Length: 92
View (cartoon, helix red, strand yellow):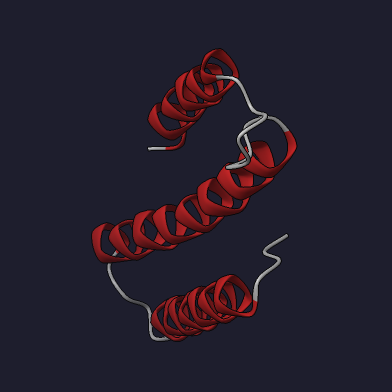
């Protein structure tokens, strides 16, 4: 969950964009759009959702395990970075 007002605004903006993509996909299905174009729209929608999920997950992991406070060890921050790299590659 984004915590700062700026993070919340960014997440809501992305969600609204995703809603627009989903509505466009629905219209395309109703219009009988060719399968190739539908699949392309679906891939874009999936990418948008995965991007949002990645951002929220990154914020959660950094807040929980690798915060920006001085008490967090370099090893812990490096571990969080490694996990996030792995997750990002999986979500692509």
